[in-house]
Image (cartoon, rainbow, N blue to C red; front, top):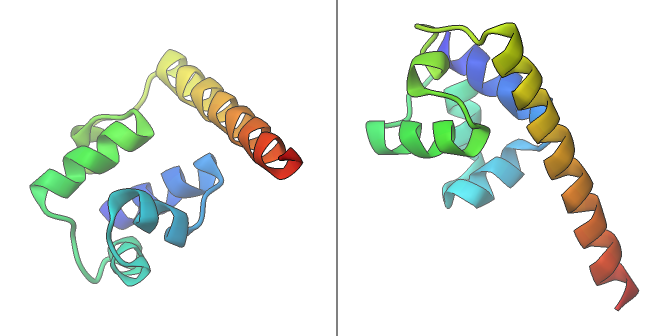
Length: 95
């Protein structure tokens, strides 16, 4: 359940395991093991992951679902972040 949620959120955000690992300051293999259910992140890491995706730990653990409104807000946030990332890439590539 947790692994499925982590993979789903990562794909929705359009990032790689490596990008998530870099953000969390961990190895790419740790992210892979979480997504495949071979290991689970500790409590502190669950909090960081939840904050990164803008969801609750309960959502990550499958104890809560997002309402339609929350899902829409999450999708809009993801789109906004993607647009900002593209602008940053364009800005740095122009210099």
